[in-house]
Length: 115
Image (cartoon, rainbow, N blue to C red; front, side):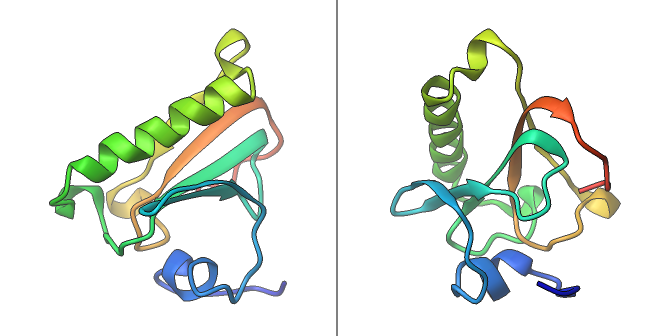
């Protein structure tokens, strides 16, 4: 894939289909897919299809409800509630891609790259 550098990886590559991802769940407003460089045994990214740069800038709180509904569906479908899972979002200097996104991770840490 090479080393892709962009401020909004999700709009520039994932949502524009310039990079094929393994989709897990998709709604009108939300896309969930396996991380392209996983840090965990199960590493899923959940994004709004509408561009939102940062959590603090989110105006439509209905998107958060839908994101967490998708996360809950995936947790149930994959049986993660009986093992382990985390839902993580990054902000400020922790946020590399300038598009609101959540990581749903489970299992063991493979490696940690900070994103």
